[in-house]
Image (tube, rainbow, N blue to C red):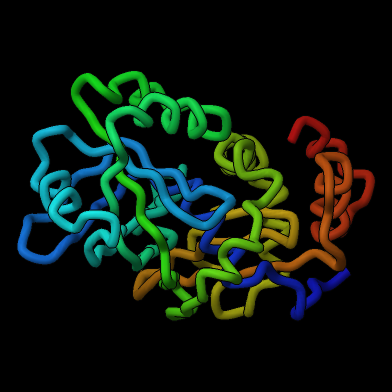
Length: 254
């Protein structure tokens, strides 16, 4: 069965996914050096909570902005969990105004973030790090397909992919132990790309992306399922159908 060319996550969903996968973040504010971020979390309400060192110039700049905050851009980098030639899958820029968080509510906000994103660095809040809030106006995503932007309202309505926490393990397992499955998926690629090194790049409820490394350049190709999937069982079935063998036992441990 051939992939459905019209089925894909929205730009806002792709941004949500890139944000939860991102392993590197930098905060840029006018007049100060970019600040390293130890924790970043895009909340469902549509703002971003970030943790920075207490002695960071970003903290002082945000404090000077008062309740209105200061203009800022948060850059997030989403990297593949596989050792590919080009590890970056996507870049996201969240634009808005960054505000200081009152000292009396720092730990409360850290606890709230930990419910969705239990990052160990949150334990440092109030000791060596402090929290800032980025009130987002717009967001831009850039990947191999180009760059697209979304407004705050669309970003607030979007949800991360239901399989995002499992994606890295699945991709590593498929790449290491299921070369036969990757080879079957490669049958959907243009003939000119089938001779390159092919690896799974991403997987979500809408489909699978493959990275093809040729001598000249890299190519990212998306293979969409026929319909969106909702759970692990339907995801495994959709992969088997895309592979062309609905009874392929090798995918049962995915």
